[in-house]
Image 1: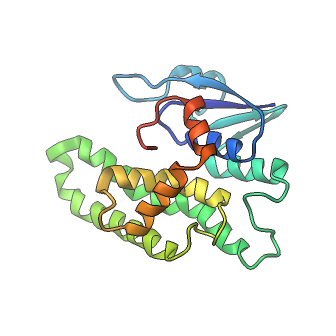
Image 2 (image 1 turned 90 degrees about the horizontal axis):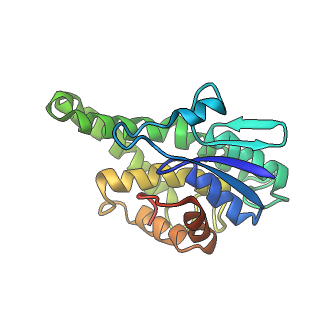
Image 3 (image 1 turned 45 degrees about the vertical axis):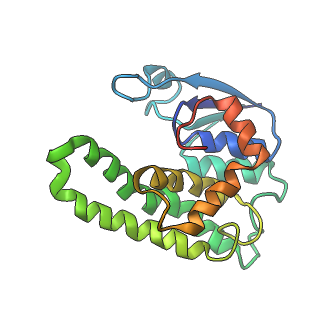
Length: 208
């Protein structure tokens, strides 16, 4: 059985969502952030030297990194679900979004989050960071276009992977200028599997 080391209010929520979409059995080991620092607890260091979440164990296999975890689960247990076939013309687009979510989109959003916490000390850099964040959010909104999901008409693991930066973008910038992303979030938040993942994972401020 897959064991998910789940940190509250974190990227690992999307791992639970993917598992629920695939209707797989899994076990959760809960880890709670330090309420003063918001950092992950030392209990995660006992699981992996980086002390980060998400992390899964599947028998003797340990996997870190959200994208790698989602790809591992889909390849091993998906049975053709939540990913286009490699021979499909949609596969490259799927692969692009799987890597883009953390490789490009998250950096300016996380910088926005941290610099806002600095207050006046971060003010000189905020215009540049805001510009870059809005460039990425706008790109995502345009790329979604008229389709319900990022790789067409059906949900894929790429949508699961993109959910976290889009939820963070909503928290930081709102969705007034990004109607396609707002509709996307409404769409995924209404999915039964998404709701089940919230019930199992516990409070998740970004996800409702």
